[in-house]
Amino acid sequence: MTFIHDERDAHAHRTRDLAIATVAALAVFAAIVSITQTIRIASASAVETPVVATKTDRIASALPGACNGESWGNWSPACVAAISGNGSTRQVRFETFEARQPATNTSVLERIPASS
Image (cartoon, rainbow, N blue to C red; front, side):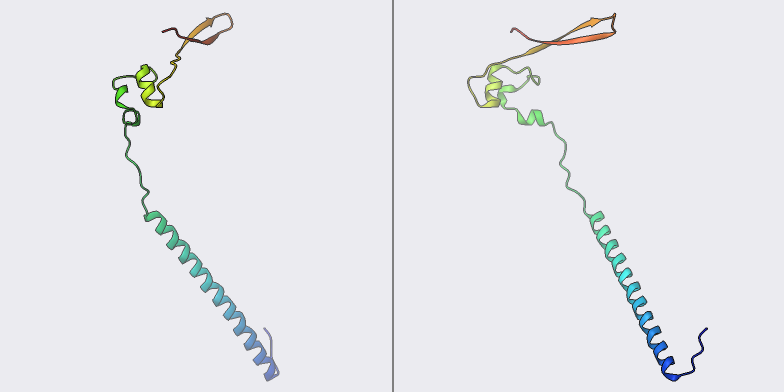
């Protein structure tokens, strides 16, 4: 505890204490404003619902009419021409064969062009 003998010292101490209290009150006010703003932004972003497209069969909707009833990848030349927009297409199809090697417990896959 400090004992003050002079009146000027008492005034200086009161001014210093008032300045410290003012700075502390401003810091608390700034913290409250900052927290309030953060909560407002977080609640505003939580309220917005994202736009979600409905799921559809995109392959069926994206293929032209020449491809009706054909499975994906096994398209006729007319279907391939309709998809690519190019009349001269070359159809290449591969078949995969497996060769097992029990001695080494492995299998080898080989892709070979299929003759149609």
